[in-house]
Length: 215
View (cartoon, rainbow, N blue to C red):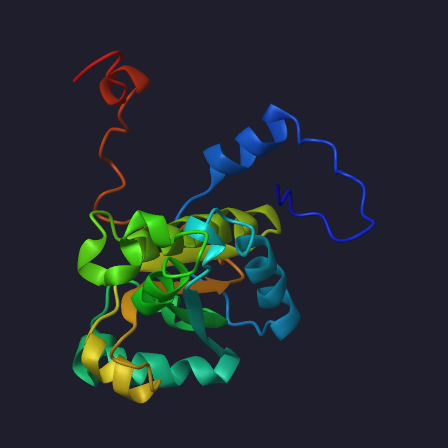
């Protein structure tokens, strides 16, 4: 079983529930960033943690098309028309040091499940054989790991939908076979700023989520 250790590395003691719980409970989507530059190694550290997220068949068929510091302008220019950007409700978002478009590769899963140890599943016959698109599931797990990892090191992060997806796809040369999942903005948080429109919605309690024994 792959427990995330490098060869010769001893198992790291489990984090206490309080430490992990604090990260989960205090994480928020950040929409207001400080104008500050980040080194590529900072993003690579977050992505390294995300690479340990669960993956069907350990296919790992997800990618991040990343733009750093001044390079993020290429994303915003493709995703937003100038007049939209001028009236955007969260202008501090444009200060994010990193913008990454999360993409998933369905063909990687078809190929992986065509291999001898997975061929019996029948999922190697094509994308349509998958009742659940695990490329989307895996990429979503990766996104959540990045959000928690960024918060854990004091950075802010936001996951959001890609506007003008076809223009972004063309600007960043994303192949059409790839599924665009969304985008991640990461940087130094300025302050909480204006909350999102959905922030005041009540979080559901466990009793509203769990259906014990049957639906």
